[in-house]
Image (cartoon, rainbow, N blue to C red; front, side, top):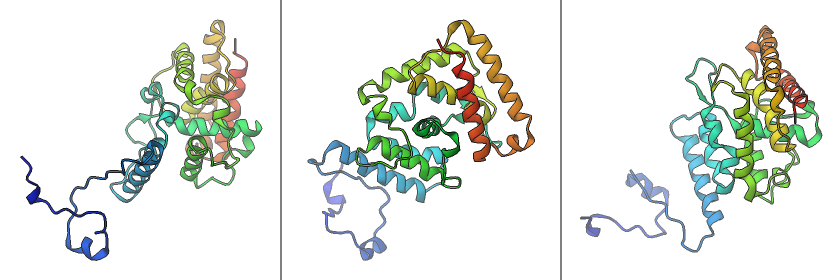
Length: 256
């Protein structure tokens, strides 16, 4: 049984440097004002968690970024669809991790803005996480408009997100691809064109040409991996843009 006499009631006016020097806050509850709107609460907690993630134990970039997905819960299935969490990729000798679906979506919507891969991530070569955060903000915040990305809300109404992601999942299943991918090259070739044509252009794959499509994708992956420079530096914008063009171009020839 908790006895209130064992605790000090702090109220709302205690925060100052002197208090923090003399008190250890081992665990704290953060309770928003009851009249605060739900969206405002999500933004508040997302900001707190983001700062904790950056300042605390080192996390993967994708783990740290996930707190921002909850700026608006309705977009979580778009940024991190359940089926994509089961597709793993191994990079840089680390344990396999789920593919970074938000990265793929941001790249496709950047490309879709001008249908020009040469402008994808322009100015963000060494600032990729800032680029992804801008994409999240543009998506969930109607007042944010960087001009970098095609507006996903004009393509997929919020109420249709789950249905559209299920359609994408169904097309991925058609390909019968391995769930464990060996590099980001595999991920990009398999996924970028699929996302572009199915999610953005609302097309479907030609069921009669699936086997041929898989051969073309695998041939392109082998070609890119056979280039030592590409295999060594897949994050280079030069090679990323090549993969965007290749994947979208291949899938274009195998639509229903």
